[in-house]
Image (cartoon, rainbow, N blue to C red):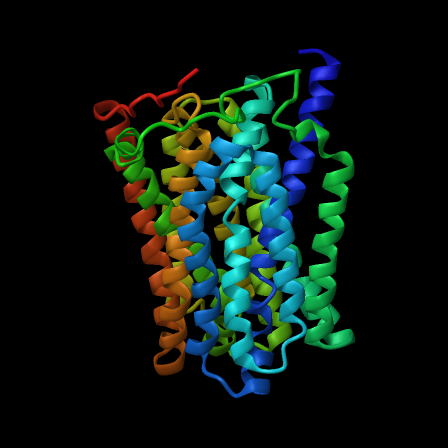
Length: 412
């Protein structure tokens, strides 16, 4: 491949990765503040858990719609619109004076968040050279994990220096700065890019209702949707209530428990990097995903049982993050294999809505668990979701052979 092609691929991956990092950062601006918000507003963990549940419920419903809009109107404009709405909503988080005000803002933020997976992955699939797609998906996931890892550190750090209002306002303003950078530098994401075109980014009719039902409600695609749903239930459990869960189960202070969450997220970052190279060197992406999910389930089962030597807790969290992160590029390659040309937005939007479905279901449930039961049950639930994800991968692999996905209908 030419140096020009390499430079262009790197630029596209960098811009899309930056957007994804912002999205994931905004996922975790509120959860690290839960102990603070609980004390300040006098609310329960269930009330706090309803915030991410509402966010991801709105995102999941709208992500399916966003997938169709990406195929119809183009990925770049949807990406910029979503990032703008998400940034403004987070800025609004920092300006509230009553707890109930967070709920409508969480719903608006979820609508903004809904565009990222269908838009990001449609752009990468269309714009990046096929020989680098595994690493492109890895860079996308890596950027998201970096956003997750940065959020608790930045939010708690700024809150301790000033207050939680300032931390949220600064975060929202930073998102608007990224929007400005995209307007200035994001021409390589244009749907009219003459260098490399694809049906994934072409604004064209998306077929009839019957054709799209047949395309999406296929056993293979439904299997992928279930995979992402169970995965999200596991990950969001760690991200939203990992800190209070570790505080309760291991009697840790807030700062130490937050460091434990950061250890898991940093492990995920390293795992994603390793998984990207592995995904480009093998066709058995299902084996990588099953192994990682199984090991993550074992790690959280051990944490729930209670690690007697607490100095092993952080290494266990790092390993759990690593093996979970390692699966990410392989999962994206599996979805790509079953995506017909011209349907990237619809398939990615539908399948990745599983992330929002799982993320909407889990926080409220775990909030109730922490309010009325022991924290070990929370970690058992997380382990169970990772185990279910591993089983789903096996089903996805089987369905890929027996239920090929119908080709997308395109009209000139």
